[in-house]
Image 1: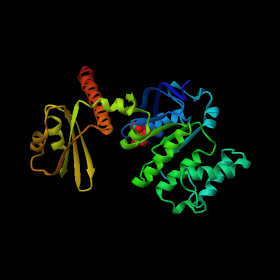
Image 2 (image 1 turned 180 degrees about the horizontal axis):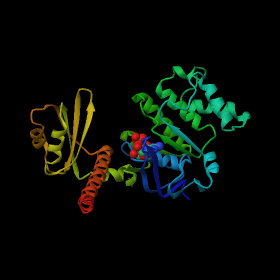
Image 3 (image 1 turned 180 degrees about the vertical axis):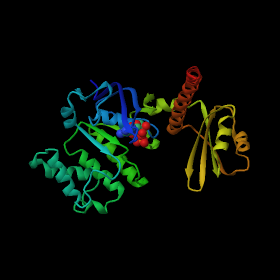
Image 4 (image 1 turned 90 degrees about the horizontal axis):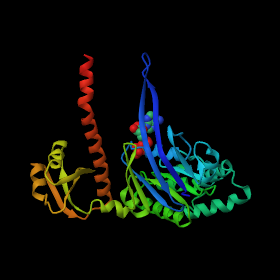
Length: 345
Ligand SMILES: Nc1ncnc2c1ncn2[C@@H]1O[C@H](COP(=O)(O)OP(=O)(O)OP(=O)(O)O)[C@@H](O)[C@H]1O
């Protein structure tokens, strides 16, 4: 039996908008997600903003009811047995919520230990052990308001582990933390895995996912687009050459021109202060160097480098593939919807 099992999970949000003439709108946030996470596995959920990651996690940890489909955590059905699920899981999300700033780290943990019904005789020992695990020993008497973002995140993790959950949901734990704090967080997450905790992690940082995850599901537009080990996902782009071009002031028209070049499979633009890095994925052997420079026209160009494909390139290829097929479906649907409108006139 897997630690987490989802079968065809769907969630539609319905909301009313407008006051005088209210209208109901629907968003299909998750559309048929199926996955299994093994005991002690560190499983990553990656995807662009709005892909449905948080909605999926919230259905698995009982905060949201699925519209359809089923999910079990440690054998308990999330919809029918939410209390049994909650007793055995921890949920840690990035950001500022969930801690009391005016209290010390120790008082925060004592307070949550009470809420989680941790046996009073065990509280002291467990809190000391968790402070050690997350590297906050010696800082426990300080108020949380003086903590850096990284320290807060580590305190969040300690809080989420107070009741010794077997399964931990980590929703973007490293959001907004500096590289050194992010490395410490990764160390903590790895230690949790070594201790046998099952972890479901969402992150926007590919290097983090590559380093930590046993398997990864890439989710876009509410469905799983690819699932496999980091090596398996990377294997999808081993037949590609990667060209990185540092530019100053490239616009959408330049990116579109590069996308249209024969042999180009995907283009991604990363903003880096005043500069941008245009990452061009092309079929292996189709040298794009001069064609890309021509497409950039008079845009100032800095360093140009060729490199091996990474997990991030695989991710971009998968997400762009999903966007292209969604566009193709829309285009495919458009003529018939137009003609339907035409018939009505
Ligand atoms: N409470 C809500 N009511 C209506 N729509 C919602 C609600 N929560 C999320 N959505 C919509 O559902 C879709 C999926 O959102 P979700 O937060 O699950 O994505 P995500 O992958 O976690 O995104 P991010 O990386 O930005 O956190 C988005 O289109 C979002 O706007």
